[in-house]
Figure 1 (cartoon, one colour):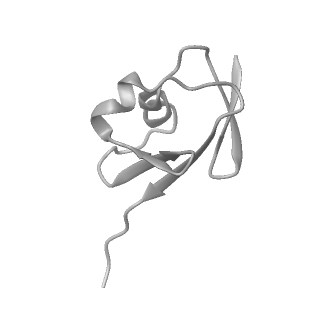
Figure 2 (cartoon, helix red, strand yellow; figure 1 turned 120 degrees about the horizontal axis):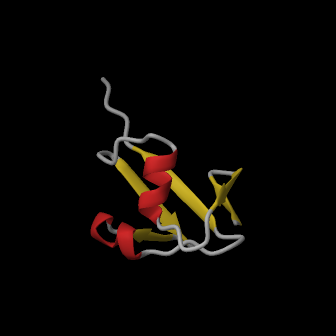
Length: 67
């Protein structure tokens, strides 16, 4: 197991988990979500290839519609 920080909250994931694992675990709709690691936005088609590392800090941004 490894600890990952997402938006200043700590989560535990299995070794080898990817950004797709975050979407599944948090029951998120992937539309309108962006992930940034080290201030670098990760494109959605790379989520399944982006392996999480122990101690990683991730910023998750959710688009909000409104007027």
